[in-house]
Image 1 (cartoon, rainbow, N blue to C red):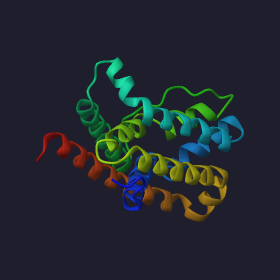
Image 2 (cartoon, rainbow, N blue to C red; image 1 turned 45 degrees about the vertical axis):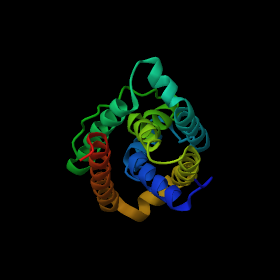
Image 3 (cartoon, rainbow, N blue to C red; image 1 turned 90 degrees about the horizontal axis):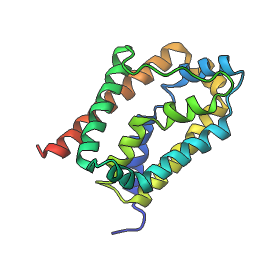
Image 4 (tube, helix red, strand yellow; image 1 turned 180 degrees about the vertical axis):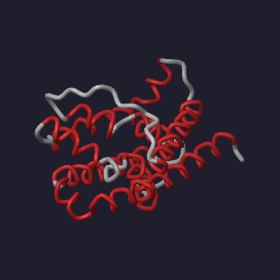
Length: 190
């Protein structure tokens, strides 16, 4: 076993990138910015990172505390990822966001948009196939990308346009569906 496996880091990074879908969240981020007045990119990235890293190392303990085994959690996560993918592809809202605090953009952005249920489920599920250190590096690479996107949200919107953002959502939706099916296949061994 290698300490860090570059191939696995790339796989984990791309899986988390698809699940977090920071590019697909651009319209939501712009809506939060309009409500809150600004996006606190550094703070939102740090809070999301802490949530993901804590769940990476303590997620198993949290599951045991509630009497949930990893296979059940992974299967539940596969269902959530499948629904998120369908939501992205069909453009229909399945997961209704809770009312947001208009005074700050950090919590609705860091959790549940960036480090939501899908992200946490994916992190736990990845532990069955990849080493913790590879997952940690994948999380850190994604956090850098998240920060860069949040810092340049207006520039990205101007360059991609509404059509480009829509296409990205659909592409990442299909990738999420494929990941969900793979996770379910691994649980049922077919």
